[in-house]
Structure formats: C-alpha cells, structure tokens
Length: 314
Image 1 (tube, rainbow, N blue to C red):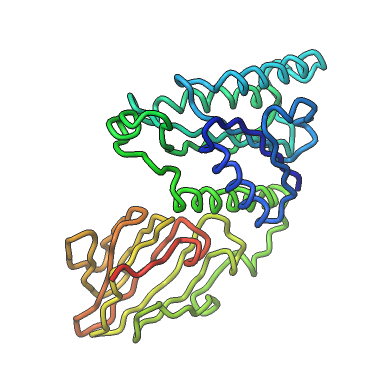
Image 2: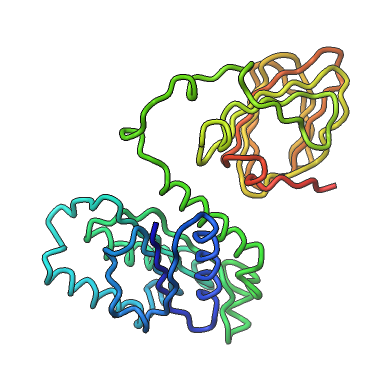
C-alpha cells in the first residue's frame, strides 16, 4: 500500500512527529513518501491509499503555508469535478491528520479546530479521515507559554515516549487498513468460534501457579484492537506484581472464587460477578491468598500483551 506524509514544521516539533508516523507505517509494510509542503505541489492525493497531513496549530488554524497548499489542491480538484454533492466515499482513499500544539490558553481545544478543518479538504473529496491526532509540543521561543499554560510544563515535548507512541499508533492504523472489510471476508467458523480448550496457553509473566489462555488476539484470529483471555489463579498463589499496560486499557471480570485486586494505592476484594476497569498506564496488581482458585476473564484494548506495553513497576 502507498502512503504519503506532507507536513509543515517551523521549529521541528511537527517534523519529529512526521518522521515517527513514517517509521510506524513503514514497519507495518507500507511504502511511504515524506515531503515538506513546499515539495508537494505536484502530488496527486488520489495516487495514494493514505495521505497524512501534519502541521502545528497557529491560533486554532493550520499555518498559512499548509492552509494555502490545501486550498490550492482543493481548488484544482474542484475544477476537475472531483468535489461532488454528498461527498460520496471513494473506496480505498484515506487520510490522517496530525497536529502539534502547545495550548497555552485552552489546551487541546486550540488544536482540535485546526485538525477538523484540515480534514474537511479530504472528506469533501470522498476520502475517509481515519483519525486526527493531537500531539502536545514545546512552545519554542516562549518559556512562559511552555510552562504557565493550560498544559503545564511542555518543555522538551514531544518526548521520546510521545514519539514512540505515535510510531506504534501509525503501525496499528496501517494494520487496520490492511484488514479485509467484514462484508468481503469469507467467514471461517472454525477460526471465529472459539473454545477454552482451543485457546493459546500463555503463562503470566512474573507469576507462578496461574494459567492464562488467550482466546482472541492478533495471533489467534487476526484481531487488530483487542486481546480477550481467560485466567485462573490457583489457591494461595503469589502476587502478580505491580505493573502497567502503558498503551492499553483493561477490564477484568471474576467468573468464580475471590481474590485481592489492587489499583493505584488501593486494594480490594473481588468476588464472582465483580468487574474492574483499569485505565491506560494505571498501576495494578492481583493475588489470591484464599483457599480456593479464582477464575477471571480479561480484555486489553491492544491485540497482544506486547503491544499493550506491559511493564513491571517494582
């Protein structure tokens, strides 16, 4: 699949994000071109499966070089008859908008109008805007704007961690594009109808005497956004140490027995029928000091434990 990234960057923040998007798309198997907006006048958006547009937010709008570029391209496509009433979707044509911002006055609300505005140039052409990404960044040239604004201290942003997240998200986005739509996919009951006996045994890291069986993830059924699994902690098991899932939310539901679950700085007993939501990046842990096993189901909002960003924190 072919992708192009067109960006405008004044202080380097947006260029860093653009290069992270490029790396993520490339790792997912896409052919990717990266151009500054001044080099992109002759680019035909319709020659690509994915067009990525990046810029900083200037007074809740794209900066003039990007705004003027988008207007020129739109005018040319309108003259070609590409802008139609109702904006019918053009199959296989997608766009991604990414916007850096410092938000010294109203935070991300200064960036969202710019991202939505840029997306309209593509929606009017029938492109599917897959997402708008907003990445906090340092306000170069103003210490006050970088330290006293709505976002607090944004000096040094986007950080290495921020850019790695952009890279991962770009890879996931490319993976979703490569997925055959359900209406075009031949349904294989043997693949999609699952049983516990047919799941993949995947022991819990850093914990003995417990069983985890993965039923749904990238490896088992080709899932793009979810992991669903069964887990059994035998009676009196050791602690599943404090950890986080840096890039995924999690839900656990107790099927049988009881155990002790911790989140943040609080512990509580969970029994059959109880459900706990664990936000992305929140420290949590679990153990079973009781004299009966505890069985649970859990879900991550990523297609594997690795992509969830599993990390022991003590």
